Image (cartoon, rainbow, N blue to C red):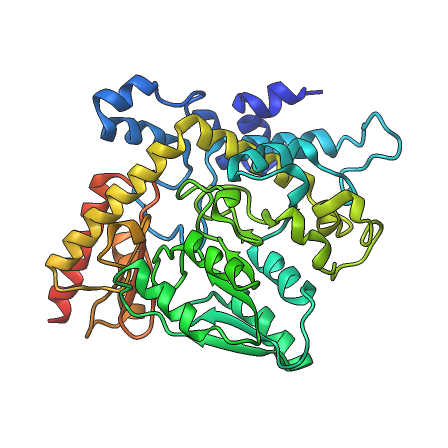
Amino acid sequence: MVDRRGFLSSFAGAAAVGTALNFGGELFAQLAQAPSQLPDRGLYDSNEEAYWTELRKQFVIPADEVYLNNGTVGSSPAPVLRAIFDGYNETEKMAQSDPEDYPIWGYAAWNEFRDPLAKFIGCNRDELALLRNATEANSYIANGVDLKAGDEVLITDQEHPGGEHPWDLRAKRYGIVIKKITLPKPVPDAGTVLNLFSEAITPRTRVIFFSHITTVTGVVLPAKEICALARSKGILSAVDGAHVPGMMKLDVHDLGCDMYSASPHKWLQATKGTGFLYLRDEVIDRVWNTIATEGWDDTKIRAERFQRIGSSNVPTLCGLRAAIEFANQIGLERIEKRHRQMADYVLGEMSKRGAVSWTSPNAALRCGIVTVNVPPLNRMDLENWLWKERKVRVRGGDPSKLRISMPYFVLRKDADRFLAAFDEYKTKKA
């Protein structure tokens, strides 16, 4: 029998076995070829682009593909994939030492996974529940907070459906009122956003819900200031942070929010199907659990009760832990700096081509996402042409919006490939 290390961690034998079984051979072969270590940190100091070029080898995205859509989903690097496969290999043996322990166990504290995540986002373990994505976390928030008919929830017009619609469901069923503020495109400064929120608050406002980074335009909203405004009015603050972990440094205690949701499968490059819900300790007991199983009403286990959903996929959590370790090895400061540099470069180049920024002219209010408007070009036609003809992936919105994600593994030459392809398409349509 091939042991775990020989089969999965080295991946040399795995590629051969996978090919023989007609299962995963190509993927195992790619993982076997990925460097076993990250680039030497000294390389970053001498040549940043060379450092990121070496790091790019950790991803199984083909070398001839330019991937600019982390705003939808990221690509897990080799160490994360290895951790997932190791997790499956370990759990599927059904050889757990405790006869009551099973690989689908959904009633555990999972502290071995919550501890590194809590440290990564700046909170305590007991304030954290491991879920499947931000949508699930947002649904817990919207359905769990005590609200009466006529109570108001204040949101923006740039929320993801997974953030907005849980509130719409609550409104349709129970008569709460959803009020939207309209964010300008682009947002000029933090003060403008704060004024919009402040002016929209009424005596009926109970919750302010907003995206830390909006999915529509990629603008980084002044979350700390909005949460402070809410706290000063006795209003709960709930933040959809789907894009934040792994894109930029996050400290939820410093933000001062009451609740925070996220999907680490985007910019942290974690396993698909991993998410989290943060609940400030003082508000945990104010949120009802809307999935009920053993422990649903046990307040002593704090936020853990929100991750008790029954059968769960533990190997995905192994991947989440590995993604956190991977990001920490690179360094969040380096990652965030890279995101800002590459996004600023593409925004500058697209502006020279006549594109109108919908993100923000204020560098503090943008990070790894650039959203531009490029009329009269049709975004879906452009999306399809870029992918099918030039193997460049972007995401847009009708009629002429392009949302360009710039994850750290995208190289300068890749950005230039996108720009050249955009020029070619624009010339063809002229």
